[in-house]
Length: 474
Image (cartoon, rainbow, N blue to C red; front, side, top):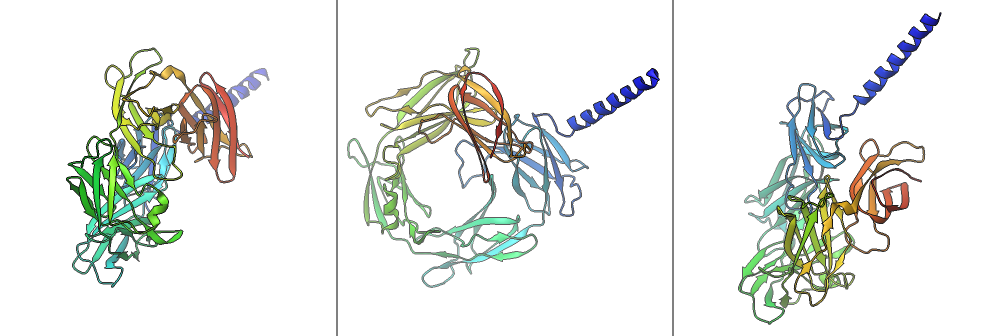
């Protein structure tokens, strides 16, 4: 009997071990992302091109971010790629004749399933708003946005009848905008919603712009700047301190009238946004505008690792903004991404006199910030205190719902209580298993909060070392 009981126990233990092993094989390691691509009928799709894009520091709506990782699916429709653990990537998938699309995020340690669809078609005519006449030669840009980033762009030119066609758009909303000399940029309204295998119409009306003479001078001396550039969303003019432009008129969801603005720049000076007061954007622009530009202050610093040695090749995002009247006008600001040199140093001309300077480190696939630094009005340069990676700690864990089940796609945000700034200390999304990792959070008082409709949680902690915790939502 004892032998029979012992055999039974061994069989039971073996079964448990097998089940645990199978569960462990369900997910890839945290530094590997597995993607399963299916066709419209749900069958595995071999030969699909998979691209993973890491978050850029300064996203530009007109440019696609660089692809970080790529691969091709095998016969089972799957591909595994090496990634930064817990870092979020934008997933883009394509295979002819299906539409290139990407409307799901991707993490390491997770299996992400993506279903391809047949493309749809967008067609329309660009017309003059006043007469309805077609505008041949109008330039069209289209942007396919997912909830998580820019997936694809198109650049087109309207034909002699003002017509344009996009015949390979993925299902979902696409922003389409047009411009032509002498008229203001505008979008197709409402934004066309593409259905698989169908055609949607999206005409665009362009309003005649108002000509404005812009003079750009050195704010210190009053001298005209020789190579100033004045930009609107419709055109760009470069000249010896002056340009004649047509400010754009853009429709607003909450206003019947549009808004206008100019971006003025010159080598060695901070950009300016005109009008200075956002409220003035909804009044007619003046015929003559004089703009004073000021030069930036050089900002420099050094980054050292936990061992005290210099850290080279680390991406740093620097942002300086005058927040004193941010509610009254467009703030003067400068932003630059730099990389530390071999001795751990970095430098960039981004300082704004009297502004608030913020910095972020790209650690573990996530942008992590320090505390803002006030720039003196009369400062000629700014030397930041040495940034030590030993001053930060990792915070990892799960976000749980009221039923104690893990919640995916929940934002987890870390801030310093009472500190005003543009950037949080760090912000990430939970993966499909409800897990999150804040790879570098400045030690000290930290407030963690979650953000998802119907699920909230806030916790304060005194961070002194790497921490693991669960955030229970209500």
